[in-house]
Image (cartoon, rainbow, N blue to C red; front, side, top):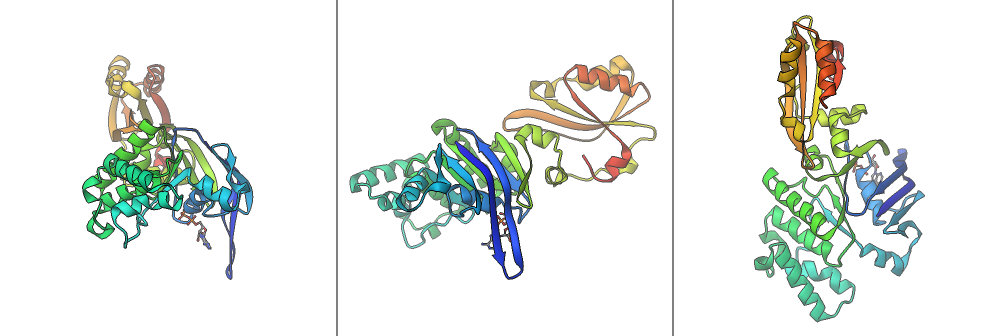
Length: 339
Ligand code: ADP
C-alpha cells in the first residue's frame, strides 16, 4: 500500500544542512497498522509528512496504492491526497466551524453535492459517536472527542490510508485507550491501512503489527512489533523499550548465579515451564525482574532469572526445548543497563 524508496529530505539553515531523512526504504502492507518510533528529532514527522507530500523529499520515490505520489503535481496530487487521511496531535480543527462543518469540510472542498455532504457527514458523526455534538464548536468538546472529530474528518473522503501524527500524545491514558480501540476497529472493519508515528511505546505495543525505529533519519531496526519489542537489537530500541522499567541493580544478583532472560510467547506464556524444568533438573531460580503483557494481542512474558544450586546450563537447554526463548546474560552486561 505504501512504499518509500531511497527517500532523503534535507533542511538547509544558516547553521548548515540537516539530513532529516537519510535514504529511507520502507514498505507498509495493505491493512497493516505500522508504527514509526524514535527520539525527538529522529525524523518521524518528516517521514509521515512525505507520505502525503506535505513534505517533498529531495531524493527518492514514494508510492501509495500503486500511485507515485512523488511524481504528481497540482490537481493530480490533490486527488491522490484524498485517498490519504491524516490526524494530528493537536487535532487541527477549525475553531470557528461547528463539528458538523469540520467533518463536512473536505467533502465540500471536493465539490460533492450538498445532499451527499449532508448524508455522509451525518453517517460519520453517527459512526464515531459524535451525533449529539454536531452543532457544537471544537472548544466545547474534550480532547478525546476532538480527536474523534479529527478522525471523522480524515475518513470523510474514504481514504485507503490514515496517517496519525502523535495522535494520542495530548490525551490522558484512558482517552488514549479509547482512541486506540477506535483505530483498531477501523483497521479491522474497513481494512484501513494506518501509519502512526509516536514516542509512546505503549501505543505501538497495543495496536501496531509492525514497527520501524528511526535514528538520525535512518531506519535502524524494523520488524513485527513483538519481535522488535521482545528482542530489541539496536541500542536506541533497547533504551526506548526499557523506558519506565527499573534498572536492575547488579548487587541483587545471587553470588555464583547463572543469569538468563526467558521470553515466553503465545499461550505458552501461561504454562508453568520454568517450575517444571527447575524441578526436573534440580535447580533453584530467583526472578530478578519480569513482565507479562500482550503485544498486539499476543500474550508474551519476559523474566530475568538467576539460576543457582544446580545445573543451570541443562535447565536453559530444557527450557529452549520447551519453546521458551533463552538468552544467556552476564552481570557485567546488566551493569551497563542492557536488557
Ligand atoms: P521528529 O518528528 O522525530 O521529532 P522531525 O521530522 O520533526 O523529527 O525532525 C527531524 C530533523 O529535521 C530535526 O533535526 C529537525 O530539527 C529538522 N527539521 C524538521 N523540520 C524542519 C524545518 N522545517 N526546517 C529545518 N529543519 C527541520
